[in-house]
Length: 338
Image (tube, rainbow, N blue to C red; front, side, top):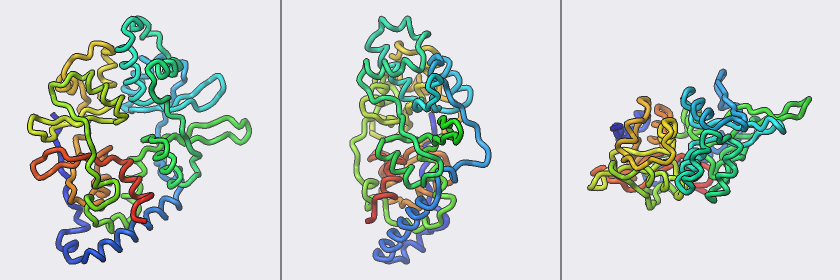
């Protein structure tokens, strides 16, 4: 079972310093900090976030789905840009959601399962239409556009990542440069924007972050197919796992589905969530939590130090209260405190 790790306050803002500030000073500093971060995002391009050297894997849409899955798992990645070789254009982004769609499809149409080994990435479009889900993400942005614009595009399209697409000056063919994630953007901000230390208002007082959300949960005994249905129908990337007292003990993520599909388990998914988690890679980052009294400065410091995709909000007894996603944080930074 993955350890549930609580956020610890960053050393940059000890409690005695926070207590010395008046509510008016905290409010003032919060607004100044948010404005500074927005200006930072507007002054940097998406290209600025990329490391000096990196690896990019692009998949041709004629590739078999089972081969694409092996490529993702062998390279320890959870998404990849798609390329249509017939028209030499970017064709969207392959993510764990697409494999969930495949499971949903064969669950609804078990008689089609014999064709699973012949399914190509091109065929994902037909599967989407058959089960009535959102098509593959095709939103993209030029690498020299501002980070602010990239964030706005992601939030508007509800995408958690956005490909950077350039164009060859001579041939005018598209070039896939990289893929930018919400986590990478927020970590870039946390590393390079000192004003994150000014965000001292409690989460409970922040627009969109302190809102108590109605969260679907499961237990270790829940059949994994029920969780997969939740992931698909709620359009979420994870389902928290709680005990009989409502205490958070783990999380089942959309990326956990990849390990099941690797073993060919498209239809036989009556196993429990607990059994499914045994297939989870050993490098799982763990479950990150916070309370409504934590501050965004603390959360940004955690993002700087640790890889995370969401924080589950718990009370003093460890019972699940709500969830804060990276989209929530980006939305607050871009549009909150006006």
